[in-house]
Structures are given as C-alpha cells and as structure tokens.
Length: 616
Image (cartoon, rainbow, N blue to C red; front, top):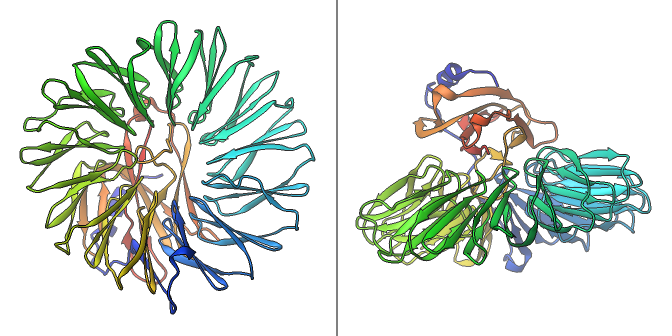
C-alpha cells in the first residue's frame, strides 16, 4: 500500500456531512406473526423461512438478503454458509459475499461434509466435485474418479484422486494440487490444517499459506490432533505439523502421552517431564514441569502448578514464564490466565500474548476475577480494573455498584450499573460506555465475540471485533432471542432484529478474540460490502485512541503510521482486499488497525469501523 496519510487527512477534515454508515442492527418486518422456530442462526448468519421465501442476514454485509424457494427445500446453515437444496438446484449463500449462487445438480448429488459447521461445503455429483466457500461465495468444480477420498472441516479440505492430492483453503476457495503421491492410508482436516499420511510420506496442507509440505513417514506412529496442528510420535521421535505456519517440526525425544490439546498447542509427557508444542510458533518447549502437575489449558494458554511454582505457557510465543506463589486456584481462557494467592487471595494475571505474569495493582480486593478470552476483570476498592492480555496493562473503571459480565468462552467483557453499560476494548485499552434506558435488571447474552443486553424496551448490542455499542428500540414485546459467535437476533411478533458484532470492514483474522491466527509471511483478507460504482480508500496503521471526525465517524489509526490504497467494488458483490504480510520478525506481536473511507454512489461518505490484525 502506498503512503497517502496527508491525503487521507485532507479528506477527513473536509466540510461535515451526514454520515450513512450501515447500522449494526438491521430489521426485517413481517405482515404475519413470525414463527420463532422458523428462525435459525449461527456464526455470522441468521435465516428466516416464510412460505416460498428465505431471508438471510449476514453480519459481514450488515443487511438482509432474500431468495425464492421451491415447494419443499432443505436448508442448512453453518457459521459462514447457507445451502438451499431444492430439487435440481442447490444454492449457496456466503456470509462475506452476500449473494445467492445456484448450482445445477442431478438427483444423486450428495453433500459430503454435512457435519461441518464452518466455511466449506463439498458436494459430490457423479464424477464431479463441487466446493463452495463462505468467504468467496462461488462454486468451484473439478472432475473426480470413482475411488476419490476426502476430508474437510472448518476452513480446509483435502482430497486424494488417483495420484493427486489436493487441498482447498476456504479463504481463496482454490484447490492446490500435489501430484505424484501414493495412496494415503489416512486423510485428516480441521482448523487450517490438512494431512495425508501414506507409507512414503506425511503431506501437510495449510489453509493459511495455501501450500503443501512433505515429511518422511513415521511408520506405526500415534497421531494426536486438534484445530490447527497434528502431532505424530513413536518410541524415539516425534514430528508436528502446523496449519498456522504450513510447516513441520521435529523432536528427538520419546513422547508417552498427550494429555492436554487445544486449538493452538498441546502439552505432552516425556520421561523428563511435561513439555509443549505451539502450532502458532511451530516450536517445541523443553520439559518444564514434572508429570502429575496441576494443569489448566485453553486455546493458546496454560497454567501448570508444581508446588510453589506456577508456570504460564504461551502458545503465541512458545515460551514458559514462572512465578513463585502458593496458588489456591487457577483459571485460563483464550490467551489470559490468573492464579489466586493462597494467603492473600489476590489474583496474579498471566498474558499469553506478552508471555509474562503481572502482580495486581494497588487497591485490588481479594477474590476471583471474571475471565474472558482477552481480559481479566478484577474488583478494586474504587470499582473494577481490566487486565488486558494484549498489553499487560491494568485499566481502571471507577464506580460503585458495578456488576461484572464476561465468560471464559468469549471475548466480550465489562460491567454495568444503574446508569451505563461498559465494555472493555483491549485494542486501545479503553472503556466504552452506552447509557442505560431502564431501571429493571437487564437480560445479558454473550457468546464468543458478540453480546446483547435487553434493557427494558431497548436492546444494546456490542461486538469485540467491532468495538462499538449499538442500541435499538424493541418495536413489540420480546418473543425469542439468541446470541451467536459474531451476530445476535431478537424476535418479536412481526419483527426480526439482527445485530452484527463485526465492523463494516471484516477481516478473516480473529485471534485473540476468536480462533483464527494470522502469522507473518501469510496473506489475510478484508471484506467490504461495496455496491456497484462505490469507491473506498482502504487504510491501515497502528491503533490509536479514536478521534471523532464530524460527518464521517471515528478515525482509529495513528496518522503517522497510515498507508492506504484505492479499492473498487468486485463484480458480483463481496469486495475482497488481500494483504500479504511480510515475514519480518519485528512484526510479531504487533496489532494493526484497518479502516475504509467509503464513498458510495448514492449517499454520503463515511468511515467504517475498525478491523484488527494481530500478527504472530
């Protein structure tokens, strides 16, 4: 991207005009009573079927879409895809592209991976294999033989056909062939990692790097795998494959068991003690605790207690940090952990992103923090303080009667009192507030990166990846409600309200808020729902305290670091912006913000909300 910081600044200080940013809440109205059982939602998608019409809301496009239905279709919904199986036509809908794409099939067509709840669909129809990606939104077809084999899960698929192995990454929706291979005895796919194991080689495919790597086989090896990695070991050695890095790593040691496996790492047992493998770093950590130590582990973090020593393991860094304390309890979530001191009952916090332990600040009161995947909320004499896993800072929120909220399975965390809801944004280490509209006890729902709070006749929505509060009135009494990983939906008699927990500019990168990790040396993608004849200026830079730009929104980037490029809409919808990150070690651990200045063909220019990219 070329540097145009001064030009961007000139645009942003132009005369104020009304902003027309697409609202985070989108409402669908119905003339007849809505049947809550006809509403299905997961991930970024909410669907509603009524009569011969299907309505789909995408958190990535922030709007409702519709298509006509036949008499008796089957409708499947995953985190990023909708598939309508309607006699001889199967139609795919991708959350990021926002269009319905029809595929003509025969009566023998079969959805192979009906159990996948993420971004890929594989359809076999006779001698043809069709694949659909929730990121690209197009069908890709290739011929296959009678003995074709496959495996698919989340964002990766691997197939073997004749003498060819092929892997698909959902991010580009492209097959990548590896010819000249022997027939594998095992195919495996999950997260971003695909494996094909034969008598002559172990072949690994990475959806992150869109490439194959091979390794000499380990005959008779035991395999353990989770999410983005696989570990194969025998009595003398081990080899690991990282889908995050697209590479193998070797260990000249004997592994006896793998008792703890998470999306990004595992802890394994050796004769010398407990050791670790990080898929983020594609590296092994030497044994650091005796077998039988007390262990808590989650996505990218673990605590291991050995008498007076509490070890914190960081998968993002592949390191171990040790603090000396007698701990009465520990808890982990995502990339953060705490241990309670047995004597003072005060919590000490650990960040897997910095790889360090932190003493609680003065004024912290004894007790268990509220943990999310990116923060710990500690009670203090003056209110609460948020420990940010990103920076290792403690950020106070002053107040009385504050009620903390958050969950160890989700990134959203904060507190509320009788006057306001507060959510903590770890990217800028700030508390974000929205006014209460009722004195009644609120109904809160949180999952992964999304939350809503029903506050009397108002519902407030928040997303950790969008970092903005959005409120809307309830038009009628509440019938049903549900929060998903990146969206929410509220049902009344005649209205269906859908909330996007994402920014208008959507990144395929999610970590640490959610699972997807972006390593240096790979390509990540940004999605922007531009209409024909729209223009956008796509900008990236280091995060800064947001500055209000009258008429445009808020600017979240440090001006001295901004680079940008012009973006035109993609024909057919779903504008995709690639960003190749150089393999520069100094970038590891840095977090970057991205925004777009959108100039629509109809309406007024505005700044999108911020998308983030933590490089590891």
